[in-house]
Amino acid sequence: EVSRAAFVGRAWLRMLKCPFPPPPAGVELSVNNHAADFTLSAELVPAISLSCLVHNSSQAEELLWYRGDGQVGLNDGNKVNISNICISPVNESDNGVTFTCRLARDKSVQVSVLLDIQFPPRLSGEETLHVEEEKAVTMTCNSKSNPQGQSTWYKDNQTLTLQSRHDLYQTSEIFRLSITKVQKSDNGTYTCVVDSPLGKGTKDFHLIVEDKKPIFPTEAIIAAVVVVTLTIFFGIVARRDKIFKVW
Image (cartoon, rainbow, N blue to C red; front, side, top):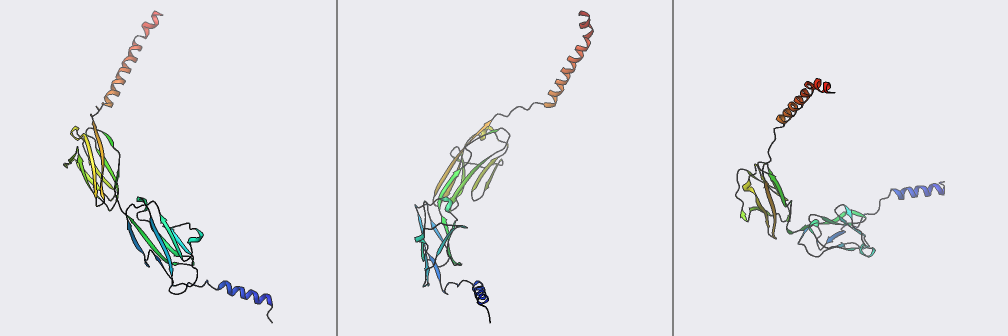
């Protein structure tokens, strides 16, 4: 006869080995009426609302929201069967961020939203640059925009005429103008203009070309100092006897 303790122990063991029941077949989620992952395009609006809803379930289902890999905190009344979050205010840093709604007891049931936040060009860079003649200088125009813009460089309000001393470099966020062997004629105001379908951004760079500093012959100066020092030294030695006689 099996003891009661042994029977209870085996019963608990069977319970521990049993997995939690999976969600009923056919349980689905939707976000803003989308049952699959999607991209949400918007401009810099005051707010974006996302609503996650459980479908095909006869019981209360807890929902979780994530921004990227981080979980979003939800109020108790905003977790079961339907859950809403609001992104406010919407700004450039929200572009490319993914929000995901997941079923708490089976996180493989989920719908993700990729934010495509569109905004006009925002430009930045060092405004005033001092450079010596014959040296090289680089003006870097940092640009953030979505969609990506196209750049044009101007000098003193005229389209820049490119010369062999000019070099242009461009990425999605950097527009760079480099000038080698700078001359006095390069002095002036350079303007970076970035155009996109949503607007235009401009940034001025004031280039000040300074006179070339004279290069002193260091070796000649050192040699002259040595000669003068030795001359003084030997002069003192030669006069030593006279100095002692006076004393």
